[in-house]
Image (cartoon, rainbow, N blue to C red; front, side, top):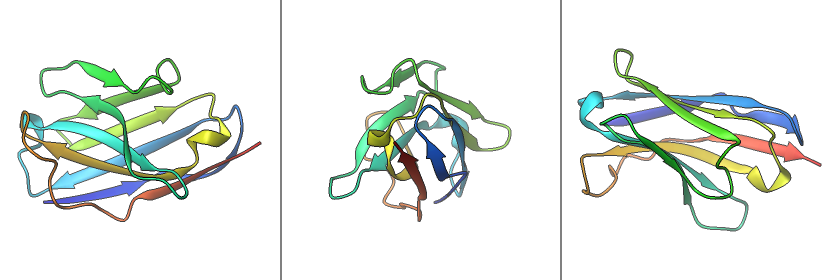
Length: 117
């Protein structure tokens, strides 16, 4: 299993970015797919999840600003991030899992998002 993230960058507060992740080596449509981030000096945290059944969920701090979407035909999951805040700064990763199993032990390099105030 492999995940390759892209789309990060430097943006001013209030700006937008769109992250993309391409998955390989897994039956993508059967996975719940998620975006995580690791803020500077902190542990990795779950940001948004797209369930295989079509529903989505978000951590409270990004709800209403971020939108997760997926394209099962391209094995791709995206994260549209609007109204970015400095506290959104971090390295963003994607991962997947089947049902309630553990996330795949296949973390990619991630993509850096930096939001300046």
